[in-house]
Image 1 (tube, helix red, strand yellow):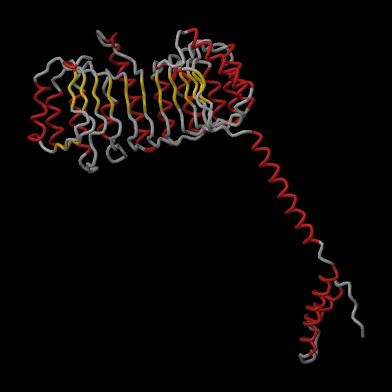
Image 2 (image 1 turned 30 degrees about the vertical axis):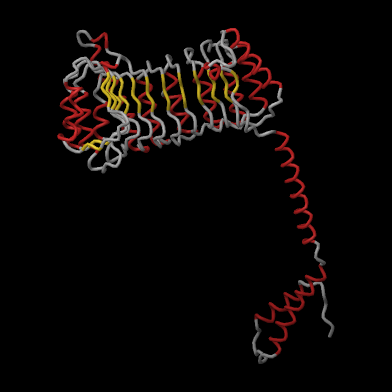
Length: 443
């Protein structure tokens, strides 16, 4: 967009409380009837300032992109809902507004209501960006439910006259929001509804393998137009890898897959590599697989898939796994991707070269080191076992002497007592104890 179509207060560090505070900054916006994008991030807006801004926005029918990231820094939780409601209500009147970025604002359970309302109703929405909002699983589930409701609104709008231009929801970026397993059922339903989604990024959300499996099998598996999937820094394990391997074969348009730092495991890495080797991912360009406990078998699988089934692959990231940098599969991948870069006319010193090849392998966990550690642990265990056996070999005579000493002490106590006229159970017990020893008393 040209500068004449962009209104920006970005990064000015303004603290705007009242309508009077914001009025001088709004004049360029009020005078521009052709504005297509607003950028307000890096400032903080109070309720009255947001209400004044909303009045200026609701008439901007050409607005397409609203960047509202980081606009409530230092605001109280009581301030955010009315301020956010004023802005988003105004945006509901803008028929061309397709992209909304609300990242870096605190939208927990107590402040999510205006956002949920907006997301369930704004039919033109195509691209949603919600990064680092502190949602948590309960508010996260409400966002997922809102997107499901949005799909119903879009479907209804398509049935109205002229509704053929209702866009699909194409991009959902919702990272660093503690979505966890508790919100995955709602998100799975949302993605099952929005089957036209193309870009999904849900990094660092504390989602474990059960939630990942649910998200993939009940939701994203239906997204057959998916181009980018980034689930980095969640927990997938072998359990989630099975679901990923099953789902990935449906994404024939996939260009980028990010599952780094997801604990795929050695077995899970092999499962994913085998799925990508099936020859249905001719557009896949980037694989991010760092820190997954992948061993040489998984690496070999990806090298095989890259050569024989992934003709467009140009970047693969595998640092932080369990193999040696001298492994033949490393060299095979490096040669293959360098050859493809050269064939594309990209030189090694080109600015675009970073989009090609292997990442820097600076943090590999060498298998031989693991074996040395295991050997040391085995030796220590053997030594501990020997010491335990030595402890078990205390002479039986010592045990019997200790037992005899206790028995004799009890006998002395019994003798010092008055003679019982009737049978005394304690004497019978003493006799029984003596009978169980291997040492006989002399009379």
